[in-house]
Length: 250
Image 1 (cartoon, helix red, strand yellow):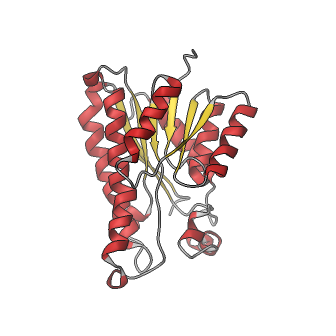
Image 2 (cartoon, helix red, strand yellow):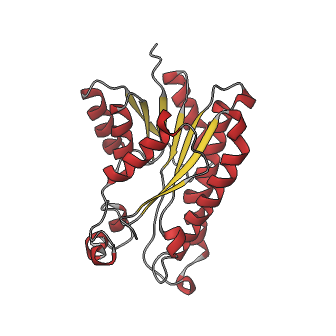
């Protein structure tokens, strides 16, 4: 069996998650590509990794369903026999709205997927990575958003709030498990040109916002992935509790 480290990327089939999965494989990780519903997209990422000589599998599971999460991690262990890293990437936005237009159902879904799912995934990872549980250590990277600091007024204040909670969770968990061999950091993407904008009803949002970004362009999924891969790497061995902005200065 290979000694190469194993990384689980939630929401790893598209956008930033796919870029992280592909980049991690190029750096020698064996990759578990989690997806909620789009099996074809996950299989395409796995196929690209294997074509390049890497090892990957697609694992179905919705992080918005608490009962799915232990099964995702069990599938990783069955196939690879170990876990060394987690990227909490899965997340959603919704249609632009003011807070006085948002339903309780929308808010519940937003926080269940973006926050509760990430916390439950991190808990499963800690149970496997932490020396307290007999693990050999590892790393967790949470995907936040610049919305956490900007607020996303009149668009997605619920999304922004869920990502602000991810920031706080990152800092707290990093301190909780630092002495147990587990590093926990986050990346805050700014306006990135991915499909997530279309899912929120604004397919041209990235290009339309270019003028408001100091670097005058949206970022790419690959640029976010590069930051995540750095935090996963041994070069970041003394970094925990950090939140790295990848936002073109916004």
